[in-house]
Image (tube, rainbow, N blue to C red; front, side, top):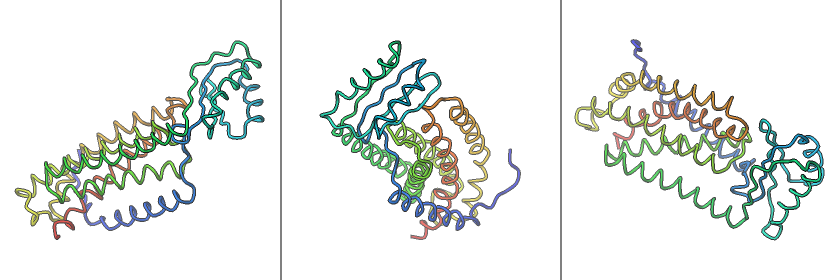
Length: 283
């Protein structure tokens, strides 16, 4: 597909510099703004309903509750109320009663309550999911290739993880359990891309000898897998864009971070995980 030979290795320092700057900005942004955590991690109430009087409902509830978030998703009205204590769990019944006063034909599709203890447990499980996914991937790369490839892959995945967090920090999208699923999907996509390039590097590096992990080998391997990388990226990207545009409000943050993540994952598999190997081979 691509007959032209691209010298990716010569641009490695630009890639490293961009990634370092982006990572620093993300860390600063995280400590300055933080994440827009959903009720999965902060606790609260979420109610989804359909009503012909949704505008009046939004007007009344927004004036009565300070922390309430009202979103229109097609014909559905999504109501989120965060920072609700366990002792105030009956607030769901109160809101439901107030809505029925405004529209007796309102149809409640979902009513969920997440208490502080449950949200704390979800945070711990999310952190554990990230840790174990990175650990298992590191072991897999270590067994299939060697420690240099393993370090390159993990650095790339940490880079993708940081970039995904940065996306939520700077866009303000809600960070919830579906966001965790999206980031884990991005990690899987990125490591798959890296493994394809690593396989070709090992084939071109004469028995995986570190002396052959040179710029020539890296460039040759990336270029030989470039058509596969581009086609995989484009087909996945188009599907994610379609989901972002037509998936509705409930899938908006999920599809947005997936779209951003696969682009960054493709970039990192070329400019981070592959181009860092000659540097590691000297160690």
